[in-house]
Amino acid sequence: MQITIKYFGQIAEVTKLEEESLEFSGSLVSDLIEVLNKKYSKLINKDFQIAQNQELVSNETEITGQEIALLPPFAGG
Image: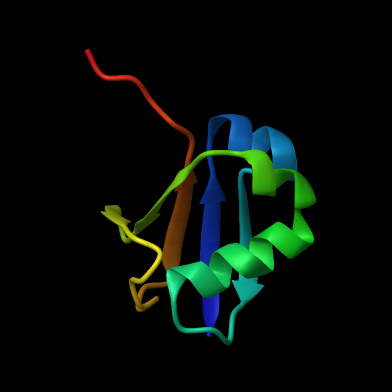
């Protein structure tokens, strides 16, 4: 399936992209993280959360949407 991945903050700095489309054949968020870690080795050491269709998801979540966002840690207050 074709998915759009949006990168924010320090994650965009690592990938040097704000957005890209990717052909993805896995099924879970953890599968996508593995693909992205291979493509962008510096992501391995970065802490980030993943949102699917604007909702935060876990590594065990099935990829069902076409829009994924990688979000750097953010502080509340």
